Amino acid sequence: MGAWTLWAGGDLVGEIRRAEPDQPWFFGTWHPTDFFQPYASLFQEELSMLESMEDDNRWDEWENCYQQVWDALLLKTPDGIEVAEWVLHVSSDEAWFRWLGEPFEAT
Image (spheres, rainbow, N blue to C red):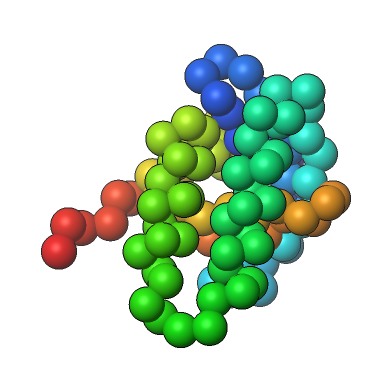
């Protein structure tokens, strides 16, 4: 199986290798490139925020933080197809993510 890839424009930010499903999440090893550096603190911030959440009232804050990730990056399948909806967490050399091939419907 090929690697899932994270992109910023035409720059490869990193690869998720050996992504194994444990539905609804996929878990793999994170292999960043030098282009990941500008986004590393953003991934640390969102994960810290997620882990420290004590109630559901902070989901809007987390989503606002993660919107910066969605605005800057895109995730591609091993076949090179852009993923419509996704959430990716990165910690050290680990990555875990969820994805959908089609955009969420607006509610």
